[in-house]
Amino acid sequence: MRAGPAFYPLARARAAFGAQPRAEAMLEGYGRVESMSEPLLSYFAYGSNLWEQRLQLRVPSARFAARASLPCFALRFHKRGRDGSAKADAFFTGRGTDTVHGVVYAMAARDLGTLDRIEGGYVRASVLLDSAAGGGVAFTYLAAEPRLDDPRLLPFDWYLGLVLEGARAHRLPVQYLRALERQACAPDPDPRRRHDHLALA
Image 1 (cartoon, helix red, strand yellow):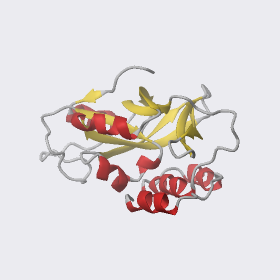
Image 2 (tube, rainbow, N blue to C red; image 1 turned 180 degrees about the vertical axis):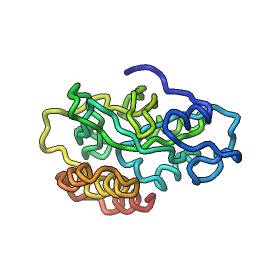
Image 3 (cartoon, one colour; image 1 turned 30 degrees about the vertical axis):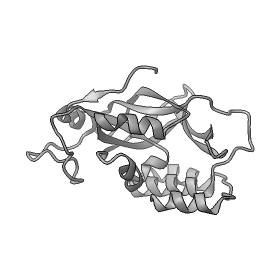
Image 4 (tube, helix red, strand yellow; image 1 turned 135 degrees about the vertical axis):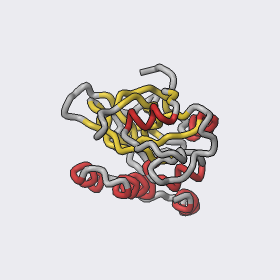
């Protein structure tokens, strides 16, 4: 789990996650990746980066490739963010009944440093995913220090909203959406922070 990110040429990324090859090197109709000659990374997003427009404002090369799931992991809100609230974590349980649903984005290798900085407090890890096309390897971010024993740690309402709206936009499974809707959250006491983050959406 501590391996480096998975580097894929475009054709291999498509083959792994089911994106259809096209002569003009497009990814699922989302536009041309700026340089098809450079390596692409397959990034599995499951938290607020499910909201694609928000991710693309910070990682411009990111393009949707496929819906995918991470078996034997469960979605938990137990990573303490810089603002003191809970952030999402794909937490390894080892149970075959647990699954984290999300999406794979293809992104340029040059944007990896930016994404690493955004995901402070997480460890980048390679994971094996399932998808409609059979799955493949991608990288994701796992909480470096999950707070497993702090029931008071809750996500802010705007953060949970970004996760939920991104999950809806990508049509993740209905039962998974229902579980997100039941997740407890807290109002952000800083209205400016709430405004600034929602502006990115």
